[in-house]
Length: 251
Image 1 (cartoon, rainbow, N blue to C red):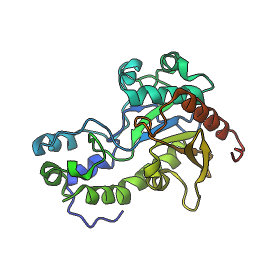
Image 2 (tube, rainbow, N blue to C red):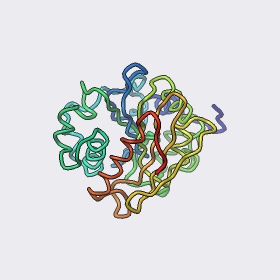
Image 3 (cartoon, one colour):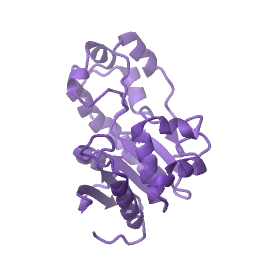
Image 4 (tube, one colour):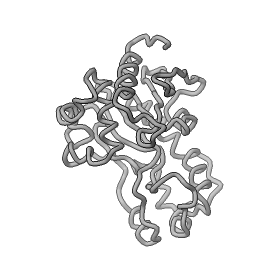
């Protein structure tokens, strides 16, 4: 893991742990889980150096068990659409997403089979680089968000790939087509290319790893150009379900 930046050592430890993960059941090769991976948390970490330094001190050496209650996850539009997709992948309907989420205790402590995470550990209101204030530079050691992203790609992504090899998720659902090369670097075996097909006018990318993990990359689930309509979410879920079969067929 190369490092040409003067990175805060506590940030390094935090960023290479399970920071940026809501948690749940990360799974094992014998009892594999479905991972749901976003780009980064929304909302935003505080733009205050002291508060950020206190966050770096948190112990994220092990995955969080998840939310206290299953319906905590459904308070946000991104999460309820995620539940709709996962309900369809499970063989159900998007309209039954609340029943599905309660049944599996989706991303909640005690759930079995689902884990929620992000590529990048810091939280921002959006992905704009202009949100990188001086406090982030002071607390991390990176002068710009571009430097931060480059360091994460070089150092955190190999950790994510190692986790995939160790825990062998049956499926990794990655959200955000414009970040597909990042998702590919973090979760897809070296030398494996992404397949692409169009479903309901939206792109679906997928690849299968040697350990049988299926990685799919779907459009973002909030903006109007993304995967937001129930009928489209249902179709994506059904196709992804078919891809997790032993021998997925091209479109």
